[in-house]
Length: 403
Ligand code: DOR
Image (cartoon, rainbow, N blue to C red; front, side):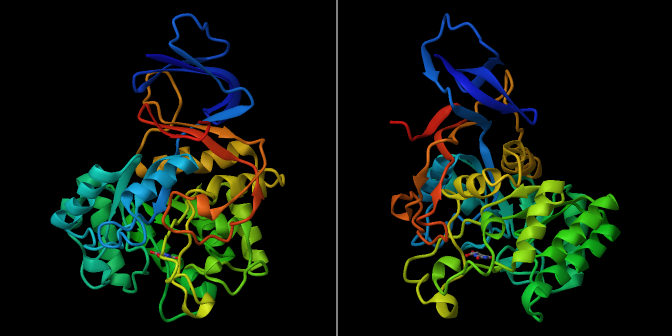
C-alpha cells in the first residue's frame, strides 16, 4: 500500500518546503517536490496543511498504574494522538513508582496493553519518590529514557549528587522537578536549579530541567550552556501563554510550579527564542473534576495539556510574531526527541511518525470534546488556530480528524 500526502509544507531539517511524502507500510518511502503519482494506491490532498514529524512530549502524566480514575494510558495516549503527539514520556508518580525492575514492568505492561502512541518510561530517582534512598537505577536503565522524581523536588543535595554519578555512568539524563520545600515563590525553583548545576559541573551528568517557570532559571540555564555543561531545559505552554494577571481563582489555573509574573513569561519566551529553553513539554496532569474544584485553596495541582499545546502555542506565539513556526516545531519535535533518544526526521527510510497540521482554520477549544479524562485547562474557550488533523504513529493512523 503506497499512500502519497501531497501539496503540504513539509517541516524537515529545520525548514518548511512544499513537498510530497510517500508512505509505504510503516515507513516513509520518499520525500520530494512534485513526486510522480503513478503507482499510488491512495493520494491524500494536504494542500494548505503542514506536515511535521510527530510531536514528542517529554513530560506527561498518564496516571497508570494506580490512578486510572484520573486518566488511563488509553485515554492519555488518545489525547496525545489528537494533539499531534506520537511519543510521550510518562512521569513516574504512579503506583507502584517505577523504582525497581518489578515495579517498572508493571508500568510497561500497561503501556503495552493500552497505548495508541509510543510511550517512553521515566524511572524514579528515589525509592517511592521518597527522596531518601536511590531507586534501582542500574536495573531500570535499559528501559527508561531518564530518571526523575517529578511531582517533588529532591531535597537532599547528597542524594542528588549520588543520583547524578550513577545516571552519568549509565549515560542517562537526570530530569529534575526543582522545588526546595523550605523556600517560597520562584526561589524554591531556581535555588534548586542552582544547586544542581554545581553538581552537574562536578559529575558531568546530563541534566534536564523540567517545567521551568521563572526568569532566574532561564538565566542560570543560559549561563550553564555558555560554560558548556550538558544541560537541557523545558517549559510548558501555560508559562509561555499566560502570566499571573491572567489567572482566576479556579482549578483551571492551579498547577505546580504556578503561573508567574509577566516578566517571567517574557524571560521564558526570550529563552525559547535564543535556544536557552530547548523544548516545550505539556506537563499534562489530569485530575478528576472533584479534585479540581475549590480554586487555589483546594484544587489538585495540574492541568491537562496534550490537546491544547499546539493550538495555544501557535496562536499565542507564532501568530503574534514572537517565534517562528520553524522554531515552535523544533521545540515540539527534534529537541524532545533528542532528550528521549528517539530519531526525529522525515526522510526516506525512516519510520512514518507524522503529524498533519491545519494552521489556518480558526476554532474554539472545548474541553468537553477532549479524549483525556481530565478537563481542567486555562485554554478552554480560547479562539485558536492550529490543529492536528491526522496523526500517524509507526505507519498507523492514530488520529484522523478529517473523517
Ligand atoms: O501541576 C503539577 N501536577 N505539577 C507536578 O509537579 C505534578 C503534577 C501531577 O502529577 O499532578
